[in-house]
Amino acid sequence: MGEMDRLDLIFERRKAFMGLLDAAKPGSYPVGELDLSSKATQQRLRDSALRGVEEMFEALQHLKNWKPHRFTDVPDFNRDDFLEEVVDAFNYFFALLIQVDVSSDEFFSAFEKKDKIIRHRIKNRY
Image 1: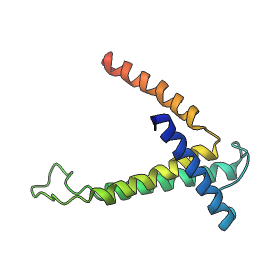
Image 2: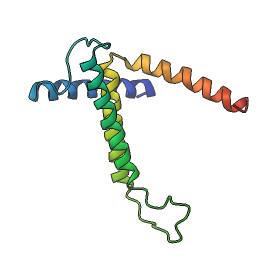
Image 3: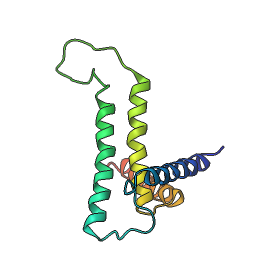
Image 4: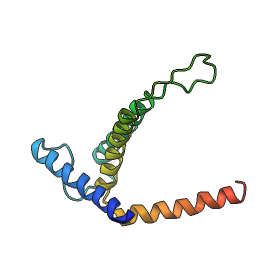
């Protein structure tokens, strides 16, 4: 399975989950086209993004050994718990993209465009 196939699968699974959740709990995720200029839609999208940020902060709580001023080491790191929180964060971010009607192809294209820009910046000592 190629990389694009996996990205497509992630988008498909996230979209299916959103549909299941919305059927079980109406209003969880809006179905159909959204008015992206409406206040209510933008609030909902912002909430979704903030949930992803919150999950990323939960992942960061597993990093105990980052303080430069700390003299003692905290060598314990639970990689599985860390990864689970990062996946939770990405689930919210992918849901956000799906709600804005961004496809996996469009996302990958935007990724490639930005990757080219940041590589150019490094090459040219931005």
